[in-house]
Length: 246
Image (cartoon, rainbow, N blue to C red):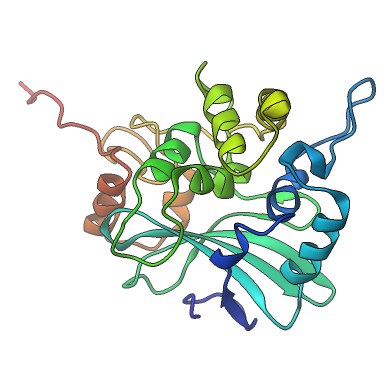
């Protein structure tokens, strides 16, 4: 596999691992925090057991094969989750790319701490709901939502968010009886928004450049205005033209 401008690691397609026991606990437990007085987060929250989680961790963290999960959406764009298995510097990188871009943009990363701007709930839900069936990668809505959920960096989420995350968890095998509690825990532990939102509500599109500064990710990308507009169109977040000036 090739991701422009991303690392020297031996990248391999990871989508086959999504159905393996232990995957979702490995992927989502880093979002969880132990709070005294509450249950300690464990693989069983995600329908796994400890042995499954340990066995799959060896695959996910193999320095000879770095699993990559592709989440394609409109206009040839894709979000990418890459397990960066550098010896001595492991982590998980969340990237955004498109074929003609000179390099992938980093949305967030985790190496014991989270960094990077992440996504608003609005953009996260939109990406989950708009697969590109003509591009290889993950097309199932529940898996797309949960793969990108660690990117969530928003000060507020809508009232329907816990039910949506809960339904996604049960769809991938989490116990029905505890999925809502797990969803609530994951959402409580989201990161705050990285910076001011653009008028369009998208940290990727940057909104209308005549009226607001670009969002944190758009500011980091070296893109032409048409490329920025194409990204905004893919996210359904390009602002509508305002009324003509008098």
